[in-house]
Image (cartoon, rainbow over all chains, first blue to last red; front, side):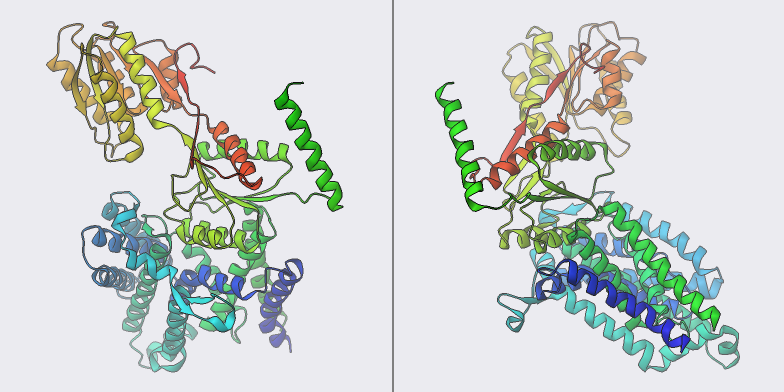
Length: 319
Length: 310
């Protein structure tokens, strides 16, 4: 009983927030346009948080996702500025993200540095590389091809939602990544092995799992996801700057933690991570519409994260 | 009461009558001010000026700072559109938030730039006139030289707002037959601009050893002016009367100007005035006025030893 309450507590909180905004903002909040807007605004965070879920399943962390996102944006933008076609810039950025993630994986699983320390180090390294690659400048304007930034403005026409409505490409991309991560984590042996490592690493090792290689791959996937989010960000702002992804990391970790309060044993589940992301994004959207001061908004978001995780921890202890 | 005043009073009465006739209390206009850069001193002054003017107008202002996150600025613009505010003010490069500006345009909500850069998606941009600023310091130099002497220019043509300053200085000095531009230097700015400007100035001082062979230094912004000042002082040539001018009047430049040495003048932008004028412009748009000029300039001020301490 207590467990069900704990699991559904965050979900109830989420619904309470939605109902609160729906009542406060009757004309604008629960409209198709606003909800579609929110999914577009959250698309980058959905991708980073989904990717972050992969390593957090094993009880690991990746603090470098924000830097990798920034680096991916500038790598693609610098390639565009040198007249490489869009697909090559995108591939180079994704390849860089995969390599960066594998680098984290080597440090964590083969060298054996704690993920917190290893990825804190690479956070700085990748951030520095983003400055070097971009020369510290924001790359924008004619250097960013219209087909790249146009992707973030386009979408699939969805007239059934109302006149002129469309599902944004960014939303579709985020959903595809979410589904992919869900399949990897929940429907493959690879995913189940990651959960086994998260449950008990020693036991997983003794059961014959190649823990080192699995962790390496998991970090690689997280890096790849972070680079994808960085490209989406660069397309949305039609520019790339060496620090633009840095805000994604803390929100992604917060979203995974919020999601963890909803699962049976407190393990990360990517669909619950999505609920965490939606919670953060809906708070931002609703509080802006209610004209709550942006600094107060930040305090509120932090308090709500602590509250939900705190309630989950307390009810778990009572069990 | 002259005719114009009469007309104004009439208008006020007519408006009051219209409001009374509608039988409703006038709803306060809502304006969202969105910027990723509120932590920067200049932006804070814009916003303070805007808020002060908006308060007088009785507007409901919501200032949103996204702490450096440009994508979040787009999201907040979209939220303001959803919320159906009466106007949006931005202080961020419009090209980077075009996705949000398109949403505002589709909803018919005017967006005004507060020193944001011009863009067809903005109803107006309020800023300082870089051409006028450059003209003032260039003419200051020409007058101090009595139209005769040599000038060293520090320019940076790769950055458009600074490039236009250089163009004006070229024109002013070119218009004086007895002023000769000794050198037109683009300093390396990766170290902030002071150190390399100083090194370049040292080389010029060495190449022109005679007192009076360098009349003035015209810098397109303050850092090269400060670098040149250091070079001149360290070479022991501070008493030759070389005139230095910069631009932007940053605190370090103001301090140097206040000392009354070679660094004689710079230009100060009126950040609060930009904020106030932005509010006035929003007011004009809300009143249904069509703006002819989409770039609106706020006057700048020449800073010399007489007013550097203010």
